[in-house]
Image (cartoon, rainbow, N blue to C red; front, side):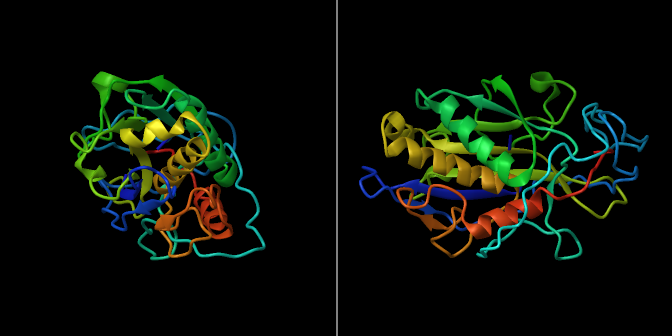
Length: 282
């Protein structure tokens, strides 16, 4: 469940104000080895949309999980409006780079240094992203993989013949320098396209969260704030960028005690990200 890389912020020490400062920089897409146009029409049942298109060296085999229709549907765009932004756009300059809705997004968790109730917090955040996008997620359990700035999109020795699942992990600034200063988390996704294709699609991603922050999740309101942070980072993973509006969870600097769920702009952006098309050849 989870890369252009983005960052959210780090809760100030003491957590007294329950503030998260979100770093504004978003790195470019990683591992852009080329995205493919959906050469087969989307519409049917599991496994019905894969076509024989040559794959670049180093890519995993074509997915067996691909459906010929989206696995879920995003909700209607809310009537209340708010700002939203995408991490990356397709070559047309308007459409967002998104995940393939015709296959599930797998994720793994490295629980080391995380809070005791991290499974519940992560599942709650994932469920909120799924509800807002229609994208389906699959929990592949735990992993010993640790955060890396240059994470490989395919790791056959660890995860088999497939795109690496989204990684969710906890770390200290000593092992994850991106958590230095005011940053409490960093999340994003990596996109690819086949040679000759025009559009990109996300295939994997990662989130790293401040292990110091995990200690605040032992009771309320810390647990709610940590869940909101995970949800914010998952927003980056599925393709949302920061906005300068405190009423949105994707605000660059947010107040978890007041804004712990999606705002109207977040919801509209997420609905659009869940309405992408199938990429059976990726």
